[in-house]
Length: 300
Image (cartoon, rainbow, N blue to C red; front, side):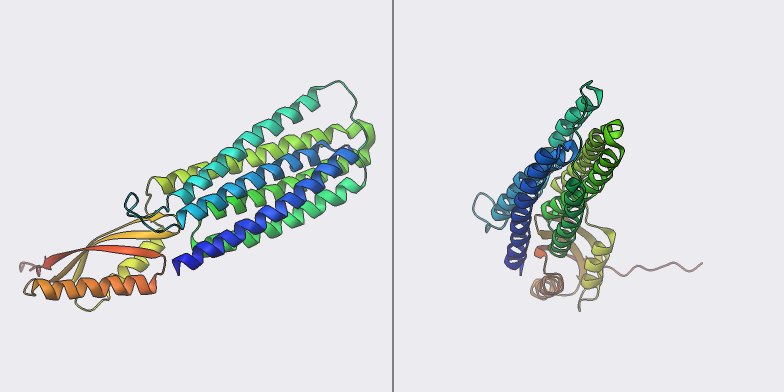
Protein backbone atom coordinates (compact mmCIF):
# COMPACT_ATOMS: atom_id res chain seq x y z
CA UNK A 1 0.00 0.00 0.00
CA UNK A 2 2.76 2.46 0.97
CA UNK A 3 4.80 1.60 -2.12
CA UNK A 4 1.70 2.18 -4.27
CA UNK A 5 1.22 5.58 -2.59
CA UNK A 6 4.72 6.65 -3.58
CA UNK A 7 4.16 5.47 -7.15
CA UNK A 8 0.87 7.39 -7.29
CA UNK A 9 2.60 10.53 -6.00
CA UNK A 10 5.45 10.17 -8.50
CA UNK A 11 2.95 9.92 -11.35
CA UNK A 12 1.39 13.21 -10.22
CA UNK A 13 4.81 14.90 -10.14
CA UNK A 14 5.62 13.66 -13.67
CA UNK A 15 2.36 15.06 -15.05
CA UNK A 16 3.22 18.41 -13.48
CA UNK A 17 6.68 18.44 -15.10
CA UNK A 18 5.36 17.76 -18.61
CA UNK A 19 2.52 20.28 -18.29
CA UNK A 20 4.77 23.02 -16.92
CA UNK A 21 7.32 22.62 -19.72
CA UNK A 22 4.52 23.20 -22.21
CA UNK A 23 3.13 26.21 -20.33
CA UNK A 24 6.58 27.77 -19.91
CA UNK A 25 7.17 27.53 -23.66
CA UNK A 26 3.71 28.96 -24.42
CA UNK A 27 4.06 31.89 -22.00
CA UNK A 28 7.61 32.64 -23.11
CA UNK A 29 6.82 32.78 -26.83
CA UNK A 30 3.59 34.71 -26.27
CA UNK A 31 5.35 37.16 -23.94
CA UNK A 32 8.16 37.87 -26.42
CA UNK A 33 5.97 38.12 -29.49
CA UNK A 34 3.15 39.95 -27.71
CA UNK A 35 5.43 42.31 -25.70
CA UNK A 36 3.95 41.24 -22.34
CA UNK A 37 6.05 41.49 -19.17
CA UNK A 38 3.34 39.69 -17.21
CA UNK A 39 3.48 36.65 -19.49
CA UNK A 40 7.28 36.62 -19.39
CA UNK A 41 7.01 36.64 -15.59
CA UNK A 42 4.59 33.71 -15.81
CA UNK A 43 7.03 31.90 -18.12
CA UNK A 44 9.87 32.36 -15.61
CA UNK A 45 7.61 31.11 -12.84
CA UNK A 46 6.65 28.05 -14.91
CA UNK A 47 10.31 27.24 -15.56
CA UNK A 48 10.96 27.42 -11.84
CA UNK A 49 8.00 25.09 -11.38
CA UNK A 50 9.61 22.54 -13.71
CA UNK A 51 12.69 22.58 -11.50
CA UNK A 52 10.64 22.33 -8.31
CA UNK A 53 8.59 19.43 -9.69
CA UNK A 54 11.81 17.62 -10.59
CA UNK A 55 13.01 18.17 -7.01
CA UNK A 56 9.71 16.76 -5.72
CA UNK A 57 10.09 13.71 -7.96
CA UNK A 58 13.65 13.12 -6.73
CA UNK A 59 12.51 13.52 -3.13
CA UNK A 60 9.71 10.99 -3.64
CA UNK A 61 12.13 8.52 -5.23
CA UNK A 62 14.51 8.80 -2.28
CA UNK A 63 11.70 8.68 0.30
CA UNK A 64 10.28 5.49 -1.22
CA UNK A 65 13.55 3.58 -0.65
CA UNK A 66 13.34 0.76 1.88
CA UNK A 67 14.90 1.14 5.36
CA UNK A 68 18.56 0.18 5.60
CA UNK A 69 21.23 -0.08 8.29
CA UNK A 70 21.99 3.65 8.26
CA UNK A 71 18.31 4.64 7.99
CA UNK A 72 16.30 2.16 10.10
CA UNK A 73 13.20 4.40 9.92
CA UNK A 74 13.42 4.69 6.14
CA UNK A 75 14.13 7.72 3.99
CA UNK A 76 10.77 9.49 4.38
CA UNK A 77 12.24 12.81 5.52
CA UNK A 78 13.53 13.33 1.98
CA UNK A 79 9.95 14.11 0.99
CA UNK A 80 9.44 17.25 3.14
CA UNK A 81 13.03 18.28 2.35
CA UNK A 82 11.98 18.31 -1.32
CA UNK A 83 8.93 20.36 -0.37
CA UNK A 84 11.15 22.89 1.39
CA UNK A 85 13.34 23.14 -1.72
CA UNK A 86 10.21 23.97 -3.72
CA UNK A 87 9.35 26.73 -1.25
CA UNK A 88 12.86 28.22 -1.49
CA UNK A 89 12.70 28.24 -5.31
CA UNK A 90 9.32 30.01 -5.16
CA UNK A 91 10.68 32.71 -2.86
CA UNK A 92 13.73 33.32 -5.08
CA UNK A 93 11.61 33.50 -8.24
CA UNK A 94 9.17 35.87 -6.53
CA UNK A 95 11.91 38.37 -5.65
CA UNK A 96 13.40 38.10 -9.16
CA UNK A 97 10.07 38.82 -10.87
CA UNK A 98 9.26 41.61 -8.39
CA UNK A 99 12.58 43.32 -9.10
CA UNK A 100 12.01 43.16 -12.87
CA UNK A 101 8.42 44.40 -12.63
CA UNK A 102 9.20 47.31 -10.31
CA UNK A 103 12.11 48.30 -12.55
CA UNK A 104 9.71 48.34 -15.50
CA UNK A 105 7.23 50.49 -13.61
CA UNK A 106 9.90 53.04 -12.68
CA UNK A 107 11.53 53.15 -16.11
CA UNK A 108 10.91 56.19 -18.32
CA UNK A 109 10.94 54.21 -21.54
CA UNK A 110 7.53 53.72 -23.17
CA UNK A 111 6.06 50.24 -23.04
CA UNK A 112 5.50 48.54 -26.40
CA UNK A 113 1.82 47.87 -27.23
CA UNK A 114 0.55 44.54 -25.92
CA UNK A 115 -0.87 42.11 -28.50
CA UNK A 116 -4.50 41.01 -28.19
CA UNK A 117 -3.71 37.28 -28.26
CA UNK A 118 -1.80 37.57 -24.99
CA UNK A 119 -5.14 37.83 -23.17
CA UNK A 120 -6.17 34.45 -24.58
CA UNK A 121 -2.85 32.90 -23.51
CA UNK A 122 -3.23 34.31 -19.99
CA UNK A 123 -6.80 32.97 -19.71
CA UNK A 124 -5.70 29.53 -20.93
CA UNK A 125 -2.83 29.56 -18.43
CA UNK A 126 -5.23 30.24 -15.56
CA UNK A 127 -7.44 27.29 -16.50
CA UNK A 128 -4.52 24.92 -17.11
CA UNK A 129 -2.82 25.77 -13.81
CA UNK A 130 -6.04 25.41 -11.85
CA UNK A 131 -6.58 21.97 -13.41
CA UNK A 132 -3.02 20.98 -12.44
CA UNK A 133 -3.61 22.22 -8.89
CA UNK A 134 -6.77 20.16 -8.47
CA UNK A 135 -5.11 17.05 -9.91
CA UNK A 136 -1.93 17.17 -7.82
CA UNK A 137 -3.56 18.38 -4.61
CA UNK A 138 -6.07 15.51 -4.72
CA UNK A 139 -3.24 12.99 -5.07
CA UNK A 140 -1.11 14.71 -2.43
CA UNK A 141 -4.02 14.76 0.02
CA UNK A 142 -4.88 11.10 -0.60
CA UNK A 143 -1.35 9.81 0.01
CA UNK A 144 -0.29 12.47 2.54
CA UNK A 145 2.54 13.90 0.41
CA UNK A 146 3.65 17.30 1.74
CA UNK A 147 5.93 17.97 -1.23
CA UNK A 148 3.25 17.12 -3.81
CA UNK A 149 0.74 19.36 -2.00
CA UNK A 150 3.39 22.08 -2.02
CA UNK A 151 3.83 21.60 -5.75
CA UNK A 152 0.04 21.72 -6.17
CA UNK A 153 -0.21 25.03 -4.30
CA UNK A 154 2.51 26.23 -6.62
CA UNK A 155 0.10 25.60 -9.52
CA UNK A 156 -2.73 27.35 -7.67
CA UNK A 157 -0.53 30.43 -7.23
CA UNK A 158 0.24 30.27 -10.95
CA UNK A 159 -3.48 30.14 -11.73
CA UNK A 160 -4.03 33.27 -9.66
CA UNK A 161 -1.00 34.83 -11.31
CA UNK A 162 -2.47 34.08 -14.75
CA UNK A 163 -5.71 35.78 -13.74
CA UNK A 164 -3.73 38.84 -12.67
CA UNK A 165 -1.77 38.66 -15.93
CA UNK A 166 -5.04 38.54 -17.87
CA UNK A 167 -6.27 41.69 -16.10
CA UNK A 168 -2.97 43.49 -16.58
CA UNK A 169 -2.57 42.47 -20.21
CA UNK A 170 -6.22 43.29 -20.93
CA UNK A 171 -5.89 46.74 -19.34
CA UNK A 172 -2.68 47.42 -21.21
CA UNK A 173 -4.20 46.35 -24.52
CA UNK A 174 -7.54 48.15 -24.18
CA UNK A 175 -6.07 51.30 -22.61
CA UNK A 176 -3.23 51.67 -25.07
CA UNK A 177 0.09 53.30 -24.20
CA UNK A 178 -1.48 55.29 -21.35
CA UNK A 179 -2.34 52.11 -19.43
CA UNK A 180 0.60 49.97 -20.58
CA UNK A 181 2.07 50.16 -17.07
CA UNK A 182 -0.66 47.73 -15.93
CA UNK A 183 1.31 44.90 -17.54
CA UNK A 184 4.30 45.63 -15.26
CA UNK A 185 1.95 46.10 -12.31
CA UNK A 186 0.46 42.67 -12.99
CA UNK A 187 3.96 41.19 -12.92
CA UNK A 188 4.56 42.76 -9.51
CA UNK A 189 1.29 41.39 -8.11
CA UNK A 190 2.14 37.95 -9.49
CA UNK A 191 5.46 38.02 -7.66
CA UNK A 192 3.76 38.89 -4.37
CA UNK A 193 1.33 35.97 -4.79
CA UNK A 194 4.22 33.59 -5.45
CA UNK A 195 6.14 35.01 -2.46
CA UNK A 196 3.18 34.42 -0.13
CA UNK A 197 2.79 30.81 -1.27
CA UNK A 198 6.55 30.20 -0.95
CA UNK A 199 6.66 31.47 2.64
CA UNK A 200 3.56 29.45 3.56
CA UNK A 201 5.04 26.24 2.13
CA UNK A 202 8.39 26.88 3.82
CA UNK A 203 6.62 27.04 7.18
CA UNK A 204 4.51 23.94 6.47
CA UNK A 205 7.48 21.77 5.51
CA UNK A 206 9.44 23.03 8.53
CA UNK A 207 6.67 21.78 10.81
CA UNK A 208 6.81 18.36 9.17
CA UNK A 209 10.60 18.13 9.54
CA UNK A 210 10.26 18.98 13.24
CA UNK A 211 7.87 16.03 13.85
CA UNK A 212 4.88 18.24 14.53
CA UNK A 213 1.80 16.46 15.92
CA UNK A 214 -0.66 14.99 13.43
CA UNK A 215 -4.04 16.73 12.95
CA UNK A 216 -6.40 16.25 15.90
CA UNK A 217 -9.00 14.27 13.95
CA UNK A 218 -6.36 11.78 12.81
CA UNK A 219 -5.03 11.41 16.37
CA UNK A 220 -8.58 10.81 17.62
CA UNK A 221 -9.09 8.06 15.02
CA UNK A 222 -5.88 6.35 16.09
CA UNK A 223 -6.79 6.50 19.79
CA UNK A 224 -10.31 5.18 19.08
CA UNK A 225 -8.92 2.14 17.25
CA UNK A 226 -6.56 1.36 20.13
CA UNK A 227 -9.16 1.82 22.87
CA UNK A 228 -11.67 -0.44 21.09
CA UNK A 229 -9.18 -3.30 20.75
CA UNK A 230 -10.06 -6.35 22.84
CA UNK A 231 -7.91 -6.55 25.99
CA UNK A 232 -6.97 -2.86 26.14
CA UNK A 233 -8.23 -1.33 29.40
CA UNK A 234 -6.73 2.12 28.93
CA UNK A 235 -4.47 4.26 26.77
CA UNK A 236 -1.83 6.33 28.56
CA UNK A 237 -0.02 7.83 25.60
CA UNK A 238 -0.27 8.12 21.82
CA UNK A 239 2.51 9.91 19.96
CA UNK A 240 2.79 10.11 16.20
CA UNK A 241 5.30 11.54 13.77
CA UNK A 242 5.22 11.71 10.02
CA UNK A 243 8.12 10.62 7.84
CA UNK A 244 7.31 11.28 4.20
CA UNK A 245 4.11 9.43 3.32
CA UNK A 246 4.21 7.18 6.40
CA UNK A 247 3.50 7.61 10.11
CA UNK A 248 5.29 6.06 13.10
CA UNK A 249 3.43 5.64 16.40
CA UNK A 250 4.53 5.31 20.03
CA UNK A 251 1.72 3.95 22.22
CA UNK A 252 1.37 3.11 25.91
CA UNK A 253 -1.54 0.77 26.62
CA UNK A 254 -2.90 -0.59 29.90
CA UNK A 255 -3.89 -4.26 30.30
CA UNK A 256 -5.08 -6.43 33.19
CA UNK A 257 -2.22 -6.50 35.71
CA UNK A 258 -2.83 -10.21 36.35
CA UNK A 259 -1.98 -11.19 32.77
CA UNK A 260 1.24 -12.94 31.86
CA UNK A 261 3.89 -11.21 29.76
CA UNK A 262 2.90 -13.46 26.87
CA UNK A 263 -0.77 -12.48 27.14
CA UNK A 264 0.16 -8.79 27.25
CA UNK A 265 2.29 -9.29 24.14
CA UNK A 266 -0.66 -10.86 22.33
CA UNK A 267 -2.81 -7.80 23.08
CA UNK A 268 -0.04 -5.46 21.89
CA UNK A 269 0.26 -7.43 18.65
CA UNK A 270 -3.50 -7.20 18.24
CA UNK A 271 -3.34 -3.42 18.61
CA UNK A 272 -0.50 -3.16 16.08
CA UNK A 273 -2.33 -5.29 13.53
CA UNK A 274 -5.59 -3.33 13.86
CA UNK A 275 -3.96 0.08 13.58
CA UNK A 276 -1.92 -0.86 10.54
CA UNK A 277 -4.85 -2.54 8.78
CA UNK A 278 -7.30 0.34 9.39
CA UNK A 279 -4.75 3.11 8.79
CA UNK A 280 -2.50 2.00 5.88
CA UNK A 281 -0.29 5.10 6.22
CA UNK A 282 1.02 3.81 9.57
CA UNK A 283 4.35 2.05 8.93
CA UNK A 284 5.00 0.80 12.47
CA UNK A 285 3.63 0.96 16.01
CA UNK A 286 5.93 0.78 19.03
CA UNK A 287 3.80 -0.39 21.99
CA UNK A 288 4.64 -0.22 25.69
CA UNK A 289 2.42 -2.40 27.89
CA UNK A 290 1.52 -1.20 31.41
CA UNK A 291 -0.60 -2.76 34.20
CA UNK A 292 -4.07 -1.30 34.68
CA UNK A 293 -5.11 -0.33 38.23
CA UNK A 294 -8.77 0.27 38.97
CA UNK A 295 -9.19 3.64 40.63
CA UNK A 296 -11.48 3.75 43.63
CA UNK A 297 -13.35 6.91 44.49
CA UNK A 298 -13.79 7.48 48.23
CA UNK A 299 -17.34 7.88 49.50
CA UNK A 300 -18.24 11.42 50.45
